[in-house]
Amino acid sequence: MTKKKIFVAIDTNKISKAKKIIRDTQTKKIIVGYKFGLQFFYSNNGRKFISSLKNQTIFLDLKINDIPNTVKSAMKSLKNLKIAYLTVHLSSGFNALKLLKRESKNIKIAGVTTLTSLNDKDLREIGYNKKVNELVRHQAKLAKKAKLDAIICSGHEIKSVKRVFNKEIITPGIKITNTKNDQKRIMKPKDAFAAGSDWLVIGRSITNGNIKKNIKNLLEILED
Ligand code: C5P
Image (cartoon, rainbow, N blue to C red):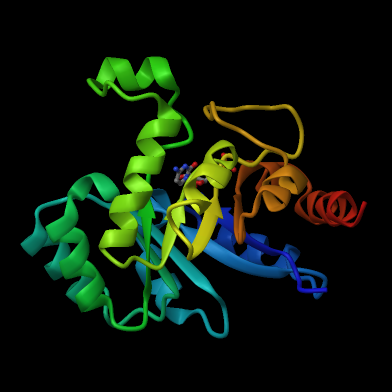
C-alpha cells in the first residue's frame, strides 16, 4: 500500500520548537513533510533554518498574492532555498500565476483556493457572490489553466475540485479531535484521504501538547 502523506505545519517563531517538531514526528509508517508559513519565515532566523534543512520535503506556505512582476521577483528571491512546494493565492490572477509557474522551475506551485477559515457568510462579507464550493471549483479551473501543480482546498471541496483539476490536492483544516480552533471547513484525516486528498496539512492537532503521542494517535487513526 502507498504511504499516506502529511505536511506538519511548523507554526512557531522558535527554532528550538521547530527542531522538536521535526524530531518528534519522525516515523517510517507515513511520509512526513514540513510546512513553514508566514510566522516562521518572517521570524528572525526562520529563513536561515529552512535553508539549513537537509533531506526533507519542504512546503513553503507564503501564500503569495501580488501583481505579476512582484510575484515573479519574489520567486527569484526564493531560488536558493531547497523547497518542494510554494503557495500562491489563486486570486493573484492568471498572469501572475503563469509567470510564477514559469519562473519556479522544479518547485511545485500550489494554488490557494479559499482559506479553510472562511465560510459562505465570510465570503459575502468580503464581497464574493459565490458560495464556497462554487468559488473553489471556479478557482480550481483557473489553477488548471495556469498549469499549476497542486491545489489547496478543504476536505469538503476535494470531490468537486477533482472533477476539474487532476493534479495534486493538499488539504488543510484537518482536525484529529473536534477542536476547530479558527478553522471553519474542517475534516477528519481519514475522511480527507478517502475523498481523494494527496497530502494533508496538520498543525496544532500534532504540535500542541505531546507531539510523539499525537503522532502515535494519528497513525492509529489512519491504520483503523
Ligand atoms: O493548526 P492547523 O492544523 O489548523 O493549521 C493549518 C495550517 O494550514 C496553518 O499553517 C494555516 O496557515 C494553513 N492553511 C490553512 N488553510 C488554507 C491554507 C493553509 O489552514 N487554505
